[in-house]
Amino acid sequence: MSEAVRMITEQVRSRVRLDGVDLASDADLARRYVRDELQRYSERALSGALPIIPDEHQAAREVVAALTGFGALQPLLDDPTIEEIWINAPSRVFIARDGVPELTAVVLTERGVRDLVERMLQASGRRVDLSSPFVDASLPDGSRLHVVIPDITHRHWAVNIRKFTRRIRDLHQLVALGSLSQQAAEFLRMCVLAGQNILVSGATQAGKTTMLNALLSSGRPNERIVTVEETFELDLVARDVVAMQCRQPSLEGTGEITLRRLIKESLRMRPDRLVVGEVREAESLDLLIALNSGLPGMCSLHANSAQDALAKLCTLPLLAGRNIDAAFVLPTVATCVDIVVHCAMDRHGRRRVEEILALTGQVNGAHVEATPIFGSEHGTLRPTGSLPPKLTKFHAAGLDPAVVLGREAS
Image (cartoon, rainbow, N blue to C red):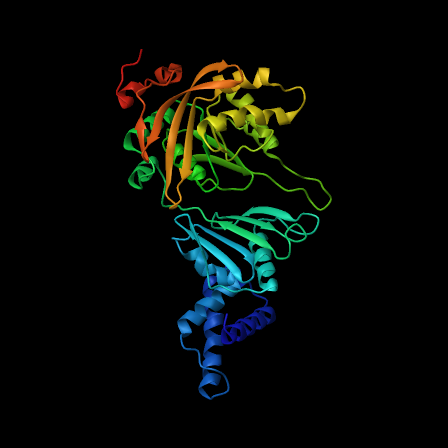
Protein backbone atom coordinates (compact mmCIF):
# COMPACT_ATOMS: atom_id res chain seq x y z
CA MET A 1 0.00 0.00 0.00
CA SER A 2 1.47 3.37 -1.05
CA GLU A 3 1.67 6.31 1.32
CA ALA A 4 -1.03 8.13 -0.66
CA VAL A 5 -3.42 5.19 -0.44
CA ARG A 6 -2.68 4.87 3.27
CA MET A 7 -3.48 8.55 3.85
CA ILE A 8 -6.75 8.38 1.93
CA THR A 9 -7.73 5.21 3.80
CA GLU A 10 -7.16 6.88 7.17
CA GLN A 11 -9.16 9.93 6.09
CA VAL A 12 -12.09 7.73 5.08
CA ARG A 13 -11.88 5.82 8.38
CA SER A 14 -11.95 9.09 10.33
CA ARG A 15 -15.05 10.19 8.43
CA VAL A 16 -16.68 6.80 9.00
CA ARG A 17 -16.11 7.08 12.74
CA LEU A 18 -17.49 10.63 12.74
CA ASP A 19 -20.60 9.73 10.72
CA GLY A 20 -21.17 6.39 12.48
CA VAL A 21 -21.79 4.42 9.27
CA ASP A 22 -20.92 0.85 8.23
CA LEU A 23 -19.17 0.72 4.88
CA ALA A 24 -18.87 -3.08 4.94
CA SER A 25 -22.64 -3.42 4.44
CA ASP A 26 -23.00 -0.63 1.83
CA ALA A 27 -20.64 -0.88 -1.14
CA ASP A 28 -22.10 2.19 -2.87
CA LEU A 29 -21.57 4.34 0.22
CA ALA A 30 -18.00 3.04 0.53
CA ARG A 31 -17.22 4.00 -3.06
CA ARG A 32 -18.73 7.47 -2.53
CA TYR A 33 -16.67 8.10 0.59
CA VAL A 34 -13.52 6.95 -1.18
CA ARG A 35 -14.28 9.06 -4.24
CA ASP A 36 -14.77 12.17 -2.09
CA GLU A 37 -11.51 11.72 -0.17
CA LEU A 38 -9.61 10.82 -3.34
CA GLN A 39 -10.81 14.05 -4.95
CA ARG A 40 -9.68 16.10 -1.93
CA TYR A 41 -6.28 14.41 -2.01
CA SER A 42 -5.89 15.06 -5.76
CA GLU A 43 -6.72 18.74 -5.35
CA ARG A 44 -3.99 19.08 -2.70
CA ALA A 45 -1.59 17.05 -4.87
CA LEU A 46 -2.11 19.50 -7.79
CA SER A 47 -1.01 22.35 -5.55
CA GLY A 48 2.23 20.49 -4.85
CA ALA A 49 1.44 19.75 -1.22
CA LEU A 50 1.26 15.98 -1.76
CA PRO A 51 2.62 13.44 -4.29
CA ILE A 52 0.43 12.93 -7.35
CA ILE A 53 -1.30 9.53 -7.67
CA PRO A 54 -0.45 8.03 -11.10
CA ASP A 55 -3.54 5.76 -11.28
CA GLU A 56 -6.53 7.07 -9.36
CA HIS A 57 -8.78 4.15 -10.34
CA GLN A 58 -6.30 1.63 -8.94
CA ALA A 59 -5.87 3.73 -5.80
CA ALA A 60 -9.64 3.82 -5.31
CA ARG A 61 -9.83 0.03 -5.62
CA GLU A 62 -7.07 -0.41 -3.04
CA VAL A 63 -8.78 1.92 -0.56
CA VAL A 64 -12.16 0.20 -0.97
CA ALA A 65 -10.49 -3.19 -0.50
CA ALA A 66 -8.77 -1.97 2.66
CA LEU A 67 -12.05 -0.66 4.07
CA THR A 68 -14.59 -3.28 3.03
CA GLY A 69 -12.58 -6.24 1.79
CA PHE A 70 -9.35 -7.87 2.85
CA GLY A 71 -6.82 -5.23 1.92
CA ALA A 72 -3.80 -6.32 -0.09
CA LEU A 73 -5.15 -9.87 -0.25
CA GLN A 74 -8.40 -8.82 -1.95
CA PRO A 75 -6.97 -8.85 -5.52
CA LEU A 76 -5.66 -12.37 -4.85
CA LEU A 77 -9.06 -13.47 -3.53
CA ASP A 78 -10.75 -11.94 -6.58
CA ASP A 79 -8.42 -13.69 -9.04
CA PRO A 80 -10.25 -16.84 -10.25
CA THR A 81 -6.98 -18.51 -11.31
CA ILE A 82 -5.66 -18.53 -7.73
CA GLU A 83 -6.78 -21.55 -5.70
CA GLU A 84 -4.92 -21.01 -2.41
CA ILE A 85 -3.20 -18.18 -0.54
CA TRP A 86 -0.90 -18.61 2.43
CA ILE A 87 1.13 -16.28 4.62
CA ASN A 88 4.29 -17.58 6.30
CA ALA A 89 5.42 -14.11 7.36
CA PRO A 90 4.30 -10.55 6.50
CA SER A 91 6.80 -10.46 3.62
CA ARG A 92 6.26 -14.09 2.56
CA VAL A 93 2.84 -14.28 0.92
CA PHE A 94 2.39 -17.26 -1.43
CA ILE A 95 -0.30 -18.32 -3.88
CA ALA A 96 -0.99 -21.49 -5.86
CA ARG A 97 -2.24 -21.61 -9.43
CA ASP A 98 -3.10 -25.03 -10.90
CA GLY A 99 -1.34 -26.65 -7.96
CA VAL A 100 1.93 -24.74 -8.53
CA PRO A 101 3.07 -22.43 -5.67
CA GLU A 102 4.66 -19.03 -6.23
CA LEU A 103 5.86 -16.19 -4.00
CA THR A 104 3.98 -12.91 -4.53
CA ALA A 105 5.21 -9.33 -4.28
CA VAL A 106 2.66 -8.58 -1.54
CA VAL A 107 4.25 -7.24 1.64
CA LEU A 108 2.22 -6.79 4.81
CA THR A 109 3.00 -5.79 8.38
CA GLU A 110 2.62 -7.88 11.53
CA ARG A 111 -0.28 -5.67 12.58
CA GLY A 112 -1.74 -5.84 9.08
CA VAL A 113 -1.85 -9.65 9.18
CA ARG A 114 -3.62 -9.59 12.54
CA ASP A 115 -6.14 -7.00 11.33
CA LEU A 116 -6.89 -9.10 8.24
CA VAL A 117 -7.45 -12.24 10.30
CA GLU A 118 -9.71 -10.40 12.74
CA ARG A 119 -11.76 -9.01 9.86
CA MET A 120 -12.02 -12.46 8.25
CA LEU A 121 -13.22 -13.99 11.51
CA GLN A 122 -15.87 -11.34 12.19
CA ALA A 123 -18.62 -13.02 10.17
CA SER A 124 -17.82 -16.52 11.46
CA GLY A 125 -18.09 -15.79 15.18
CA ARG A 126 -14.88 -17.77 15.75
CA ARG A 127 -11.75 -16.55 17.48
CA VAL A 128 -8.03 -17.10 17.71
CA ASP A 129 -6.02 -16.22 20.83
CA LEU A 130 -3.51 -17.70 23.25
CA SER A 131 -6.13 -20.03 24.74
CA SER A 132 -7.22 -21.14 21.26
CA PRO A 133 -4.19 -20.75 18.95
CA PHE A 134 -5.76 -22.60 16.00
CA VAL A 135 -8.90 -21.62 14.10
CA ASP A 136 -10.81 -22.95 11.09
CA ALA A 137 -13.49 -20.73 9.60
CA SER A 138 -15.39 -20.05 6.40
CA LEU A 139 -15.13 -16.69 4.63
CA PRO A 140 -18.28 -15.09 3.16
CA ASP A 141 -17.36 -16.36 -0.33
CA GLY A 142 -17.05 -19.95 0.92
CA SER A 143 -13.26 -20.04 1.09
CA ARG A 144 -11.74 -21.82 4.09
CA LEU A 145 -9.51 -19.95 6.51
CA HIS A 146 -6.98 -21.66 8.78
CA VAL A 147 -4.81 -19.68 11.21
CA VAL A 148 -2.09 -20.67 13.69
CA ILE A 149 -0.45 -18.11 15.96
CA PRO A 150 2.69 -18.00 18.17
CA ASP A 151 3.85 -19.62 20.37
CA ILE A 152 2.60 -22.60 18.36
CA THR A 153 4.31 -21.10 15.32
CA HIS A 154 7.89 -19.93 15.77
CA ARG A 155 7.44 -16.20 15.22
CA HIS A 156 4.77 -15.10 12.74
CA TRP A 157 1.08 -15.83 12.26
CA ALA A 158 0.56 -18.63 9.72
CA VAL A 159 -2.51 -18.07 7.55
CA ASN A 160 -4.00 -20.34 4.86
CA ILE A 161 -6.95 -19.42 2.66
CA ARG A 162 -8.20 -22.22 0.46
CA LYS A 163 -10.52 -20.99 -2.27
CA PHE A 164 -13.12 -23.26 -3.82
CA THR A 165 -13.78 -23.02 -7.50
CA ARG A 166 -17.43 -22.83 -8.49
CA ARG A 167 -16.79 -23.51 -12.15
CA ILE A 168 -16.81 -27.27 -11.54
CA ARG A 169 -20.36 -28.31 -10.76
CA ASP A 170 -20.76 -31.80 -12.19
CA LEU A 171 -18.96 -34.90 -13.43
CA HIS A 172 -19.12 -33.82 -17.07
CA GLN A 173 -16.99 -30.78 -16.28
CA LEU A 174 -14.41 -33.05 -14.69
CA VAL A 175 -14.43 -35.08 -17.91
CA ALA A 176 -13.87 -31.90 -19.93
CA LEU A 177 -10.89 -31.02 -17.72
CA GLY A 178 -9.37 -34.47 -18.20
CA SER A 179 -9.75 -35.45 -14.55
CA LEU A 180 -12.12 -38.27 -15.32
CA SER A 181 -13.00 -40.42 -18.32
CA GLN A 182 -16.51 -40.29 -19.77
CA GLN A 183 -17.04 -43.97 -19.02
CA ALA A 184 -15.96 -43.56 -15.39
CA ALA A 185 -18.21 -40.50 -15.04
CA GLU A 186 -21.23 -42.47 -16.25
CA PHE A 187 -20.40 -45.30 -13.87
CA LEU A 188 -20.11 -42.93 -10.91
CA ARG A 189 -23.35 -41.22 -11.87
CA MET A 190 -25.04 -44.63 -11.86
CA CYS A 191 -23.53 -45.34 -8.44
CA VAL A 192 -25.02 -42.13 -7.03
CA LEU A 193 -28.45 -42.86 -8.49
CA ALA A 194 -28.30 -46.37 -7.04
CA GLY A 195 -27.65 -45.01 -3.54
CA GLN A 196 -24.16 -46.48 -3.28
CA ASN A 197 -22.10 -45.44 -0.25
CA ILE A 198 -19.07 -43.67 -1.68
CA LEU A 199 -15.73 -42.88 -0.05
CA VAL A 200 -13.61 -40.23 -1.81
CA SER A 201 -9.92 -40.44 -0.88
CA GLY A 202 -6.78 -38.53 -1.74
CA ALA A 203 -4.05 -36.26 -0.44
CA THR A 204 -4.47 -32.60 0.46
CA GLN A 205 -5.49 -30.50 -2.58
CA ALA A 206 -6.17 -33.63 -4.65
CA GLY A 207 -9.73 -32.49 -5.40
CA LYS A 208 -11.75 -34.51 -2.88
CA THR A 209 -14.25 -31.75 -2.09
CA THR A 210 -14.69 -30.95 -5.77
CA MET A 211 -15.36 -34.62 -6.46
CA LEU A 212 -17.95 -34.79 -3.66
CA ASN A 213 -19.71 -31.74 -5.10
CA ALA A 214 -19.70 -33.25 -8.58
CA LEU A 215 -21.00 -36.61 -7.35
CA LEU A 216 -23.82 -35.01 -5.38
CA SER A 217 -24.90 -33.03 -8.44
CA SER A 218 -25.72 -36.38 -10.08
CA GLY A 219 -28.35 -37.28 -7.48
CA ARG A 220 -32.10 -37.19 -7.96
CA PRO A 221 -33.58 -33.65 -7.81
CA ASN A 222 -36.03 -34.49 -5.01
CA GLU A 223 -33.32 -35.96 -2.77
CA ARG A 224 -32.85 -34.39 0.69
CA ILE A 225 -29.16 -34.02 1.50
CA VAL A 226 -27.72 -33.28 4.94
CA THR A 227 -24.04 -32.31 5.08
CA VAL A 228 -21.84 -32.11 8.18
CA GLU A 229 -18.35 -30.55 8.14
CA GLU A 230 -15.80 -29.04 10.48
CA THR A 231 -16.06 -25.83 8.46
CA PHE A 232 -18.27 -25.22 5.44
CA GLU A 233 -16.56 -26.31 2.23
CA LEU A 234 -19.17 -28.15 0.17
CA ASP A 235 -21.11 -25.93 -2.20
CA LEU A 236 -24.19 -27.80 -3.41
CA VAL A 237 -26.82 -26.57 -5.84
CA ALA A 238 -29.39 -29.22 -4.89
CA ARG A 239 -32.94 -28.09 -4.08
CA ASP A 240 -33.20 -29.63 -0.61
CA VAL A 241 -29.97 -29.24 1.38
CA VAL A 242 -29.21 -28.72 5.06
CA ALA A 243 -25.56 -27.83 5.77
CA MET A 244 -24.10 -27.95 9.29
CA GLN A 245 -20.64 -27.20 10.67
CA CYS A 246 -18.90 -27.70 14.00
CA ARG A 247 -18.61 -25.02 16.67
CA GLN A 248 -15.64 -24.19 18.85
CA PRO A 249 -16.03 -24.04 22.63
CA SER A 250 -16.65 -20.66 24.21
CA LEU A 251 -14.14 -18.81 26.38
CA GLU A 252 -15.62 -20.73 29.32
CA GLY A 253 -14.95 -24.03 27.53
CA THR A 254 -18.63 -24.77 26.87
CA GLY A 255 -20.85 -24.98 23.81
CA GLU A 256 -18.60 -27.08 21.58
CA ILE A 257 -20.38 -28.97 18.78
CA THR A 258 -18.37 -31.87 17.34
CA LEU A 259 -18.73 -33.87 14.13
CA ARG A 260 -19.95 -36.83 16.18
CA ARG A 261 -22.79 -34.73 17.56
CA LEU A 262 -23.67 -33.38 14.11
CA ILE A 263 -23.86 -36.86 12.58
CA LYS A 264 -26.20 -38.02 15.33
CA GLU A 265 -28.38 -34.92 14.94
CA SER A 266 -28.49 -35.29 11.17
CA LEU A 267 -30.23 -38.66 11.48
CA ARG A 268 -33.21 -36.86 13.05
CA MET A 269 -33.55 -34.58 10.01
CA ARG A 270 -35.03 -37.08 7.54
CA PRO A 271 -32.03 -37.22 5.19
CA ASP A 272 -32.11 -39.17 1.94
CA ARG A 273 -28.32 -38.92 1.86
CA LEU A 274 -25.79 -38.06 4.56
CA VAL A 275 -22.49 -36.42 3.57
CA VAL A 276 -19.54 -36.02 5.95
CA GLY A 277 -17.14 -33.47 4.47
CA GLU A 278 -14.07 -35.18 5.88
CA VAL A 279 -13.60 -38.08 8.26
CA ARG A 280 -10.59 -37.73 10.55
CA GLU A 281 -11.25 -39.35 13.90
CA ALA A 282 -13.88 -41.17 15.97
CA GLU A 283 -16.77 -39.67 13.98
CA SER A 284 -16.05 -42.44 11.48
CA LEU A 285 -17.82 -44.82 13.88
CA ASP A 286 -20.99 -42.71 13.89
CA LEU A 287 -20.87 -42.54 10.10
CA LEU A 288 -20.55 -46.33 9.79
CA ILE A 289 -23.48 -46.82 12.18
CA ALA A 290 -25.56 -44.43 10.06
CA LEU A 291 -24.63 -46.24 6.84
CA ASN A 292 -25.33 -49.57 8.50
CA SER A 293 -28.92 -48.42 9.06
CA GLY A 294 -29.48 -48.25 5.31
CA LEU A 295 -28.95 -44.50 4.86
CA PRO A 296 -26.97 -43.68 1.66
CA GLY A 297 -23.90 -41.59 2.37
CA MET A 298 -20.66 -40.11 1.13
CA CYS A 299 -17.50 -38.86 2.81
CA SER A 300 -13.91 -37.92 2.07
CA LEU A 301 -10.74 -39.10 3.76
CA HIS A 302 -7.02 -38.34 3.46
CA ALA A 303 -5.12 -41.35 2.11
CA ASN A 304 -2.37 -42.30 -0.34
CA SER A 305 -4.45 -44.86 -2.24
CA ALA A 306 -7.91 -46.40 -2.29
CA GLN A 307 -6.71 -49.44 -0.35
CA ASP A 308 -5.03 -47.18 2.22
CA ALA A 309 -8.31 -45.33 2.59
CA LEU A 310 -10.13 -48.56 3.42
CA ALA A 311 -7.43 -49.54 5.93
CA LYS A 312 -7.68 -46.11 7.55
CA LEU A 313 -11.48 -46.25 7.73
CA CYS A 314 -11.13 -49.60 9.50
CA THR A 315 -8.76 -48.04 12.05
CA LEU A 316 -10.32 -44.65 12.84
CA PRO A 317 -13.45 -46.04 14.59
CA LEU A 318 -11.18 -47.69 17.15
CA LEU A 319 -10.50 -44.18 18.47
CA ALA A 320 -14.10 -44.03 19.73
CA GLY A 321 -13.37 -46.18 22.78
CA ARG A 322 -12.10 -49.48 24.15
CA ASN A 323 -15.42 -51.21 23.59
CA ILE A 324 -14.98 -50.88 19.81
CA ASP A 325 -12.81 -53.52 18.18
CA ALA A 326 -11.82 -54.66 14.71
CA ALA A 327 -14.22 -57.63 14.88
CA PHE A 328 -17.06 -55.13 14.51
CA VAL A 329 -15.40 -52.48 12.35
CA LEU A 330 -13.97 -54.60 9.51
CA PRO A 331 -17.19 -56.39 8.48
CA THR A 332 -19.14 -53.15 8.92
CA VAL A 333 -16.82 -51.28 6.53
CA ALA A 334 -16.94 -54.23 4.10
CA THR A 335 -20.74 -54.30 3.95
CA CYS A 336 -21.50 -50.56 4.31
CA VAL A 337 -19.00 -48.93 1.95
CA ASP A 338 -19.64 -49.72 -1.72
CA ILE A 339 -17.29 -47.56 -3.80
CA VAL A 340 -13.92 -45.88 -3.24
CA VAL A 341 -12.87 -43.05 -5.59
CA HIS A 342 -9.21 -42.08 -5.21
CA CYS A 343 -8.07 -38.64 -6.41
CA ALA A 344 -4.50 -37.47 -6.93
CA MET A 345 -2.56 -34.40 -8.07
CA ASP A 346 0.60 -34.86 -10.14
CA ARG A 347 3.76 -32.75 -9.93
CA HIS A 348 2.40 -30.42 -12.61
CA GLY A 349 -0.67 -29.60 -10.52
CA ARG A 350 -3.10 -31.66 -12.63
CA ARG A 351 -5.84 -33.36 -10.61
CA ARG A 352 -7.36 -36.62 -11.74
CA VAL A 353 -9.07 -39.77 -10.53
CA GLU A 354 -6.48 -42.55 -10.26
CA GLU A 355 -8.64 -45.53 -9.33
CA ILE A 356 -12.16 -46.64 -8.50
CA LEU A 357 -12.71 -49.70 -6.32
CA ALA A 358 -15.88 -51.61 -5.54
CA LEU A 359 -15.99 -53.53 -2.26
CA THR A 360 -16.91 -57.21 -2.33
CA GLY A 361 -18.52 -57.21 1.12
CA GLN A 362 -15.98 -59.76 2.35
CA VAL A 363 -13.10 -59.57 4.83
CA ASN A 364 -9.87 -61.48 4.32
CA GLY A 365 -7.97 -61.59 7.59
CA ALA A 366 -7.36 -57.96 8.57
CA HIS A 367 -8.16 -56.61 5.09
CA VAL A 368 -11.40 -55.54 3.44
CA GLU A 369 -11.63 -57.04 -0.04
CA ALA A 370 -12.23 -54.77 -3.02
CA THR A 371 -12.32 -55.18 -6.80
CA PRO A 372 -10.69 -52.55 -9.06
CA ILE A 373 -13.28 -51.21 -11.52
CA PHE A 374 -11.10 -48.47 -13.03
CA GLY A 375 -7.35 -48.06 -12.81
CA SER A 376 -4.77 -45.58 -14.07
CA GLU A 377 -2.67 -46.72 -17.02
CA HIS A 378 0.00 -44.25 -18.24
CA GLY A 379 -2.02 -41.41 -16.72
CA THR A 380 -5.29 -42.51 -18.30
CA LEU A 381 -8.21 -43.94 -16.34
CA ARG A 382 -9.29 -47.23 -17.92
CA PRO A 383 -11.84 -49.92 -16.96
CA THR A 384 -10.37 -53.15 -15.64
CA GLY A 385 -13.13 -55.30 -17.11
CA SER A 386 -14.60 -56.16 -13.71
CA LEU A 387 -18.11 -55.49 -12.44
CA PRO A 388 -19.00 -54.34 -8.91
CA PRO A 389 -19.47 -57.53 -6.83
CA LYS A 390 -22.43 -56.05 -4.93
CA LEU A 391 -25.26 -55.45 -7.40
CA THR A 392 -28.30 -55.44 -5.11
CA LYS A 393 -28.60 -51.64 -4.89
CA PHE A 394 -28.13 -51.25 -8.64
CA HIS A 395 -30.87 -53.75 -9.40
CA ALA A 396 -33.20 -52.21 -6.80
CA ALA A 397 -32.82 -48.86 -8.59
CA GLY A 398 -33.41 -50.48 -11.99
CA LEU A 399 -29.82 -49.88 -13.11
CA ASP A 400 -27.24 -52.19 -14.64
CA PRO A 401 -23.54 -51.17 -14.40
CA ALA A 402 -22.73 -53.67 -17.16
CA VAL A 403 -24.36 -51.26 -19.61
CA VAL A 404 -21.69 -48.68 -18.80
CA LEU A 405 -18.80 -51.06 -18.20
CA GLY A 406 -19.49 -53.11 -21.31
CA ARG A 407 -19.88 -56.51 -19.64
CA GLU A 408 -22.76 -58.82 -18.96
CA ALA A 409 -23.79 -59.04 -15.32
CA SER A 410 -23.61 -62.54 -13.94
